[in-house]
Every structure is written in C-alpha cells, then in structure tokens.
Length: 458
Ligand code: PMP
Image (cartoon, rainbow, N blue to C red; front, side, top):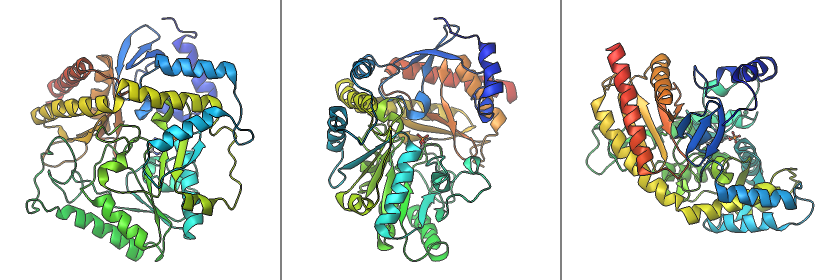
C-alpha cells in the first residue's frame, strides 16, 4: 500500500488546521497512520497490518470495507444522492421496513439521523414533549453524546464544558458491581464469574436494592415529582463495559414510569447483535423501552443514526415540523440496508456470541495470572478488562501504566480501546467477523504485553 501524503505532512496540517484537541487524541504516543481496511484488518501507511479489536468504537459492525456493503454503496452512489423528507424514494422505505422488523411491538416508528448525539437529542426532545416534564436521569460514567443537550446526559467530566449545558439532566450512582460499593460474582449476566465475593445470600442480589436505593435518593432530592425520562445503555460503552446487577434496569424502568417518565435505551454501542445473546441489548434485561436510539454499527461506519419509538410518542412529537437534511439520505439507507442483510448472511450475532464468550473465557484465565487485572466482563463482543493497582484495593491502574500496555499491544499488531471514568478499562469491541485464530492471537499478544509490563516494573 502507498499513502497519498507523508506522515510529516499530515501531522503539520493537523497542527495548523485541525481541532487542536485531536492532537491529543491520536490515541497512541506513536500514532497509527491508517491507510486501508478489510474486514477485521487495518493497514498503516507503511503496509503494517493490525488486527482491529476496537472497530472505531464498536462502529465497524460487519467488517471494514465489507465487499457486499461497498457494492451496495457504489450502486446507490451511481443512481441517486439526495436529501430526505421532500420526495419519496425506495431506499429509505426498504430500510425502515427492515429495521422495524428487528424491533418488537410497539417500537415501530423510525426517525433517521446522522449520528448518535443527534439521535439522543431527538429522543430528549420527544420525551419532554410527550410527558410534559423536563428532568432526565442518566447513570454516572455514561456517554450519550457531545452536542450541547446530550452533553448534559453524558456523565463524565472529560466531555463537559463550563457553560450552561444540559439543564434538567441529573445522574445517579452507576450500579457497578466491581468498583462500586456493592456487588459480587452472581450480580450480573455474564458467561464468566467475577472474582469478588459478596455477602448476599445465595440467589438474592442485595446490591441491586442498594443501587436502586441511590436512584430513589435522586428522586427524593434532585428532581421534581414528575420526570421526563431515564437514559441508559444496556451495557455501558465509553464508561468501560460496566454491567449492572440483574433487574437494575427493570426496577429503574418501573420507578421512572411511576413518575411519568419514559425509558430510553441507548443502543448506539450495544445494538445490532453486539451483545451476542440478543439483537438488541435491552432484550437481555427483560425490559421494553419507550424509545431506542442507535448509531455507530447501524451503517458499518457510514454516518447514520436512528430513533425508534411508539406511534403514541410519535404523535406527541408531531406538533412541530422536524426536518433533517441528510437524515435518511438514499446512500446511508442503501448502506444500512445492506448491513442488515449482511448481518443475517454472515451470522454476525452468532459470531459475536461465540467469539465473545471465547474471549471472555480466555481473558478470565489471564486475569487470574496478573495482579493488575481486576475484572473481565461483558457479553458478546462488548468486552471490558478493568485494570487495577492490585486486586485487593481495586484502585484504577494509573494512565501511564495503561498507556504502556496499550502501546505495546499495538506494537505487537493489535488495536484495542480504553475507557472507564479513570481510563482504567481496556475495551474490546471488534468488527463482528473475527475468528478463533484472531482471538487466540490477541490473547497471546495481550498476555505478552502484561508480561513485559510486569517484568519492567516489578
Ligand atoms: N451514545 C453512546 C452510547 C455512544 O457511545 C456515543 C458515541 N461514543 C454516542 C451516543 C454519540 O454518538 P455520536 O458520536 O455518533 O454522536
């Protein structure tokens, strides 16, 4: 492969003309200059190949430049590009028909957007108009977007600014059964066990009651008696693959509805089979949201998002004109349509389930070998490895140490992600086309990176 521009030239343009913040988030000390992608693989400008286990944050769902999706995009590009909402064209209708079929009743009305933040903005507006209430609750540590409204939902200081944003947004304690004050091995739905024991009687999770107690305290102290909504991811993404105690979302939904609020599942990361056991993450929690938002994997990396809701909520929202120039444009719809077909043909949800379980099993063995791995968790290909100073304290491994292991893993040919409020959790969320060989390669590389770190520092 050959790059169109030298690395030095790109870095110079970055310094002069790009958002200065992106200088800081090249992600690696020695940045990866990517050039080309194919399925689970990325190549850099020097022709080095990387196994991509981060997929641009769970965004490339069926594989980089998947041939079928690329062909569908090319076909549509030659036929029609246009804006939405003015004329009627088939790619949008074909797509919403297919997408609606993946969701249970009564979630059948679809609004197409261009990003996850836009989808969540729309969901906030809908919830407020439908309920006539204003206040919204999210979980601490969550990420729901970077627009001025969704910045209020996002409960992570790194993404906040000192301006009047997110009025009416509140958060409750994240029900984190590993790092939080309550929890234990049987609290969450996972193919593997956590290593922390807790004092709950067998078969009875008291941790859930404690975290629900925190939510009740928010109701009693921070919001009016009637609220607009609760936003929650089925498994936290940017927050570090945090999984909640069983029944936490179910109990939360009940309490929110008692106060007049609607329940919103943010499936931007967990949707489209990512959690393996179900096509939608919320289906693993025995709940029925009133609104579901999605983006990222929806179009395998092409900009697109969606909000799905009920006819009843859509009717309340219909009082004003909602217009979105690019949302649901024919090219995005043709791509997203082909992504849904490809998911079926390639069996991506099954791969996610099988490879996810295989990785979790392998990682739990590595966890038992190293004092600095506190927790391995997740479902399907939405996996987190929480790093700690030591297993007893469960304090976050400092950023410099995280960075060393992260960089070393990359230098050995595997790209993973970082997350968690303190940047203490490695995140694994690859394109859902990885094989057992890829998983074995990663496990060997990660084990070696940990070995190298321990030898250098202990
Ligand atoms: N919700 C979740 C759960 C996300 O992870 C993200 C992006 N990290 C968003 C919403 C916002 O999506 P976008 O970046 O497309 O605006």
